[in-house]
Image (cartoon, rainbow over all chains, first blue to last red; front, side, top):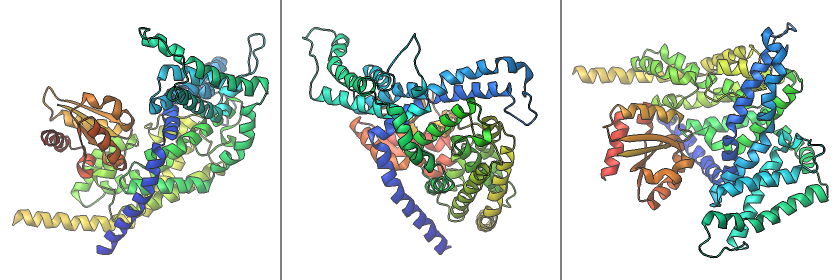
Length: 430
Length: 98
């Protein structure tokens, strides 16, 4: 099939053209520091989500009966959900530390003092009073996430500049290095903290509210069916060429998706119904449409294939695929750079992503208020993350979309492989 | 011999590690880690093998390996997908003896 191979090569060339700038972008120290820092906060997001889910079982938020799903949890439901309030809902506070540390690692600056610097700068930039032992914690939530990214990156960058220009207090030789470090940090810390304090407390500029107002339209607008489908399409193109699409795009998507997920949890805690949550595009959304529509139907088709190798391969690929670990199928079959399967793989991703988004937009299913580990099987991830069993229908629809789109391509692939298999058998019997 | 496998998150490659251990001798040590950890741990290993899904990062990994006087190579797609422990551990040994 010379013309089909040509197409596969073209897709590979196109993908490599996209991959190169993406790789360069992801390597920018600030970009990878944001991503690493947020990934470092993942336990906070997951644990907050788990407590949120358990607490929700004790409220009438799940189902239409108006009664809590698990009665005995009802009296302590709000106490259980409070864990979410101090973990996931304080994400910006945790991230101020992890992003500063991640950036310090990239720039080669001492990490412990950078962690302190990141936290301190964030607090001084967002809090302007403590009255009777109380302060407003709103900046710690999703609202402060953009601010924390800015303050932690800027603070560590300025710290690094001071160290490079040697604007530090120097200790005489013989002073232990740790003592020396503590003093060398004084001048840059003083400078950075003074700026943050001046902006927030002296001038009284509320950067959290200002940025939220200024950026909200842009960030919220990015969560729509077109950007989501485009994002998924580019991702599947990368995977089709055998590159880790999720990983390559996460520099762009992680900050946004984390922000959106945290905003959803916050709104849900405040009493918003799951179908009315502000954001559709979350990690869970990707989890219930990506591999369920591409790899799962393919495994079903392989199980029914006339080629013996296909059937044994499918059986070995099932356990990992249930947990959405797809590398064995992508590289083993292989699906990557496979002239027969690349096209339906990309097509299916695009169709199922748009369909799934639309079903959430039309409020057919509840949106994700909680985030589970990415390797959670989608049929658990959907119902637990949204509290809506109808996410199972979404998954079934996605599998069906995949089956329909793959079928003709798979038949061509199957007969091609069958021919090869029979030729091999002839060779052996000769 | 100490073998380091580098991939995106270390999840699927940990499967490969399991399969490689079946063909490893007692003093072999095999570990899978994400690319971000490479620079800080590379000195503890003898050879570096890279998963095909992050082959766009291979030039960078190669450079890091060279500055640490280690050898790095890409794992071929087919044996990675088949999670073929025997082929990959032999690749590591050949690379080390090069």
